[in-house]
Image (cartoon, rainbow, N blue to C red; front, side):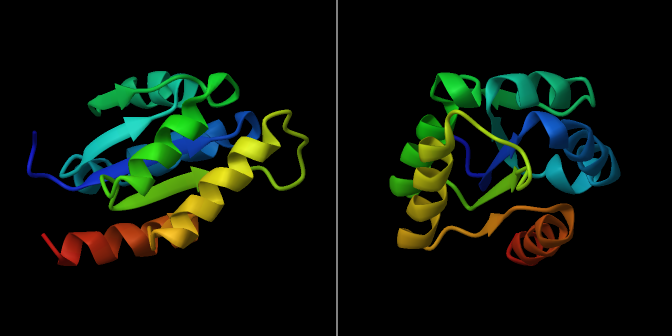
Length: 126
């Protein structure tokens, strides 16, 4: 297993472009971490030349897979660019992921500004 810290990356459809822009702007910093992402988001992030371990897409269980990793203490942070104005059929999975992050004290960013702060904080621990 790698000794690098692990960050999970997730983005709702309406926020995927924002996640890709964040990945491009923070490529060098993100490259220092082991990255895990839900399926569609991860496929798009791979196009930025970052290495990403892919999980299922969110609606097919990817959010639950990432929540399990948070519960197991594997994740150092979750960057989840969520669309608070959109309707999401897998909302229970989203709420479960957020609750698991709170229960296990895993930093959770739901927008680029908070994600940048978490990334800076994790870098200072490297």
